[in-house]
Amino acid sequence: MSRLNITTQLAVIIPVGTGLVVFDSRTWWEAAVLVVGVLTSIVAVVRWARDDIHVYALPLLGISAAVWVFGVVVSGSTTAFYSITLVGPLIVPQMKRHRITAAAGLVAFVAVAGASRLLVSPESVLAITFEFVLVPTAVMVVTLGFMFANDAFYRVLAELDEAREHERELAVARERIRFASELHDIQGHTLHVVKLKTALAEKLVRRDADRAEEELREIHALVGDTIRQTKELAYAQRRLNLTGELENAKNLFEAAGIRVRIVRTATVDEGAGELLGQVLRETATNILRHAQAAQVRITLAESAITIVNDGASGDDQPDLRGLSTLRDRLAGFGGELTATREDGEFTTAASLPAGVAR
Image (cartoon, rainbow, N blue to C red; front, side, top):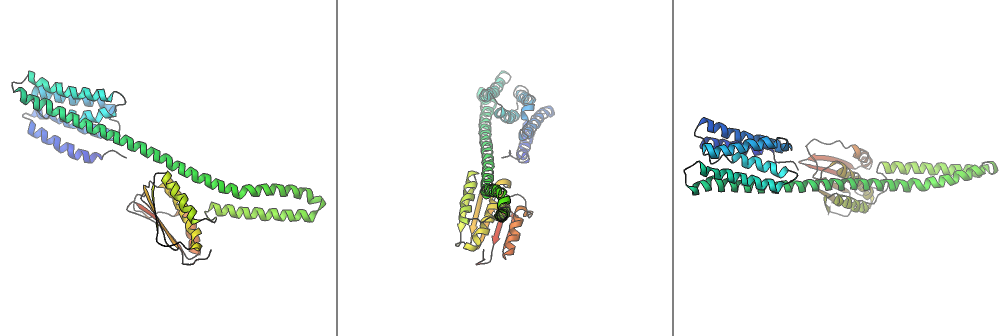
């Protein structure tokens, strides 16, 4: 997941920082220093959102720390900690090592710097301790805790996304292996028989020409049938079992971390099962390869199937591409295949006339 939107964060940071500058500055130069602190916070948020805040960590921390010290020792600003309590928590959780030590050091710096107000101000110890030590330190601790939790949350999400991507790749790889296995089943036996018959025809060509010719005719027919089956497999036209395709698609989706819901509104007509199974297989492959789906809903009717996934983006109507061959084939039986994208969902729907003959 991406970080929080920069605009959303700045919409809070800028007004709050501006308000603190207006209400906590007595002279223009005090206001100027506090403005520097606010600008430093803005830069830190932008760099954090772009994942390169570590490059600017030292100058950002140095400026915000100087603003806090200035507020404590010179201007007596009770809100000068605003910058350091924003910049520090953005930087420390991003550190690769010694994050806890750095966090403790940051909290200690805010508290000690605030306590130094006791050396330059005649105000009561209780008031100074509350305004310059307890409040800034508490804000720093809370902000650091939130940012550490936020960083841990996004790290876990990143790991889950990576694991899910690996699962998707494995699911696609398994589908390719299954395709290769079917291709092997079609061609392996044929090639073996052709080899034997060719050797036999070679021996018979001089002794029994009629028998050799018969063997060659059988080889020709066998190769022709294999070419037909291979084409059918390549275009997802080989005879399929809808129940088997449903189970296979469910297993593939679940392996990829995608929730699956199957709704049966009626018993699927046996004549339509093969074509609908082809649509399901092609759509499942497309979802695994191209979509970022979290959930898929498969609805079955007597002679129709609808597959909806929530991994689409944009509202433009898609090109059927890989489904175009199936669309033409369904049209040949009086059926229809459509694919639409709307409101983040991609829907593939196929329907056939009742009682279609296979």
